[in-house]
Length: 179
Image (cartoon, rainbow, N blue to C red; front, side):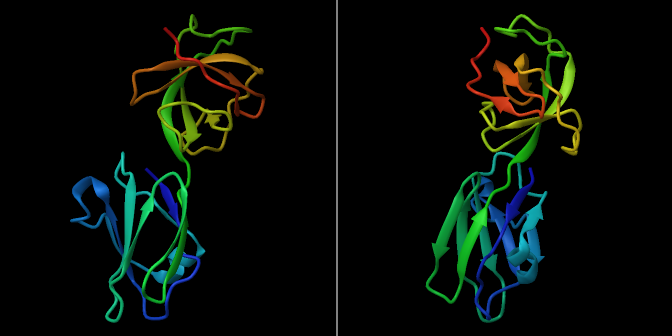
């Protein structure tokens, strides 16, 4: 999954940085040698292992080996005991899914999942209002919804939903689970 990691302030003696995941207990870095300058402008890492909940950003410099743990999907501000203050925002990710091509005015649970889609979300596996649905894996072409219900599913999860998709591809309101 892709996560945007941003350091708003980093001590002069910090960096470069290694990035770790909680999935293996922070043992093996999934990315190493990330420059402080890259993290300060917002570093998008596409190497974050799927299902990571916490990313550890650890300075690997000669004079600073402090780290900060960042919860994926939230905004966290942490001040460590060194000269580093870190603010990180986890970017929503594009999650592969399926949707119905046909919409319905009241409930799309009876429609067929026949069209691939990608959902820009930080709330998988549940579609929430404000998530955006795209026709392409790059997140360039939003689904041109009709403001009606479409059947929607994240491929990696079993539940299917009846979600309203507006003309700009945004999910509007609650998305009830299909029986």
